[in-house]
Amino acid sequence: MLLSWLTIPWLNKISGQQLSFQTLLQAKILIPLFVTPFIIGIISGIYPALFMSSFQPVKTLKGLFKAGGGSISFRKALVVIQFAISIILIITTFIVFQQLHYIQTRALGFDKERVVTMNYTNEVGKQYEPFRTELLQNTSFKDVTRSSRIPTGRLLDNMGASVSNGDSLQPVVADIKYVNTDYDFLNTFDIPIAAGRFFSRDYGTDTLNYVLNQTAVKAIGWKSDQDAIGKDFVYGGTKGHVIGVMKDFHFESMHQAIVPMVLIMLPPRNTYFNNLSIKIAGGNTTAALGTIERTWKKFFPETPFEYTFLDENFDRLYQSEQRQATIFTSFACIAIFIACLGLFGLSAFAISQRVKEIGVRKVLGANTGGLVGLLAKDFLKLVAVAAILAFPIAWYAMNSWLKDFAYRVSIQWWVFIAAGILAALIAFVTVSFQAVKAATANPVKSLRSE
Image (cartoon, rainbow, N blue to C red; front, side):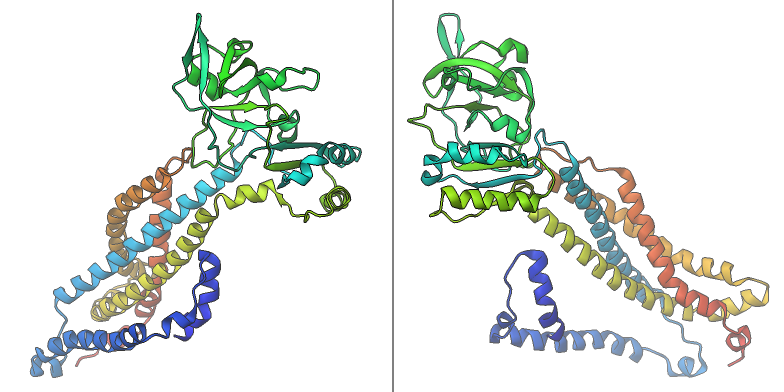
């Protein structure tokens, strides 16, 4: 109970939950909590009681009693199960961290660094252009844009698309999601153009034009990115032309595959935005934030200044995986510790049965290293059996987990070998305490006649 009380804050931190110690202080929990140890104690005591009552007193008093193989086999089975669980947790921890590293280092197709995002309200819309102009007079800022959605969000909006096929319009089978933007969206997020151009203030008709991503071009069936430029395209009932194709980028998390997407610029009377994004050019981010805040309060005094960084939004997409990695690591350490306790007890019991054998081998010239290797060999076999049981289970579990990601690492064979070797090293160190103690003991004591 004391350990539970001490560890609940830590558990809440890594799990993202709000668990309270008061939850345990209920009769339906407290009664089983206190009764269970007594039941386990009684059950645990029955086995040695029955086992010891079967001893023959004469043999026991003469020191001729030796534990049967059945009890040792049961102990070995428990150790194998404990180490199998430990190896599974080691493997899962490895793979979860590999996937997290892959997510954090994979090229996203846009620049998420130093982008400040804020809510775009009606008040902001009334003074947006002067606000943007004043900010960009400061060299600390690269660009400012507004959009209906921003990268790291979800693509949920679809208005239906059609393309020209001869003299008729043919509906596009694939769902093409849209984001309403302004002229500065691609420059703010550093999204490269694959063909054509982006919306420009130099062209007054761009509110009738469209910019697609490469996945959308493939979904429509056009031959290439360049082939799409100038093609008739109808979206949401509005006919226009494709003026540009942007390279694919991860708008959503890597749980989702890149989907067909179109950027549009609705006419001013119909346009709507939800997000304001400001790209800091570099240098002192704190000073740049101060400038944004002063400018914001100047133009929008009634609207609270609240912001987030785009890279923080990106990190929040994978909070669940980060928590899983921490939990797997914690429970892997606990499972290894428990397995080591079981192995320590088994090794102490088994080696105590072989003290005379060890004494004889020492008298015949065996050295300490050879004896330690001899004694540890049998226990390392148990770890090998545990690894054979753990590998397919771990592979199946992590293969199922990785299916939740459209973009994921491949499960590599060396992870399993590394987990097995790590478990074997831990087992060897654990057994060595007892083995070295037995191997360095005086053989005279062990060989002394009863």
